[in-house]
Amino acid sequence: MSEDASLTEPPTSMYQRILGADYSALDPRLQRYFGPIPAGWVGSGAGVYRVAGSRRRFLRPVLALMAWRHVLFPELGHDVPFEVTNIPRRNGGLSAVRTFAFRGRTRIMEDAMIVRCGRLYDRLGKRGGLGVTIRLSVVSGALHMTSTALAVHVGRARVPLPPLATMHLREHIEERDPSRQHVDVRIDAPFLGEIFRYTGSFTYTIGPSPER
Image 1 (cartoon, rainbow, N blue to C red):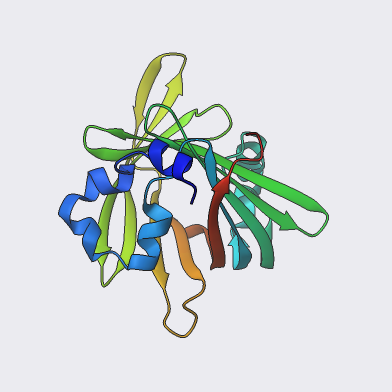
Image 2: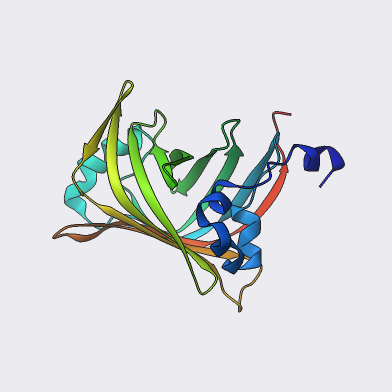
């Protein structure tokens, strides 16, 4: 990292502020991913998802609409190449763009995260229309995320939603494959169980933004 970059690096990341002392219990290799990104730099990851999408065929019309908004997607694939780019924001937040390279089609998921009332708050989609409040915890060196509330944003209004679904994420390092980090994201709905999932592994680097 250059001297200039280190001077512009924020003192803490959102994850550090939310987790507090528990952040030190996170695997040191994950601390690099969930730590601060210097201004003008981005985090870039690339890997393969062993499975990505939904097995619930009847949800495909809804998921197709969500794909148009860059939230979820209706495809179901195995060994799907993907990339993620994490971009720091001036407000201390972080935005991310995830690209899934299905055969014959590329799908994009976008989100922008901030700290709200001491919790992680994620605005999903290219317009941030769906808001998710997320609880963080560290278990055996892995980061766990669980959604606790949903809301839709209409203009400047934030409208709470009933618990239509719950997101569970686990990100960890496996000792048999320490050069990569592993992620498992699952979305469950009442009475239906799992309705969407992606899980796989990737490598990650932090470097100057191409736009610099």
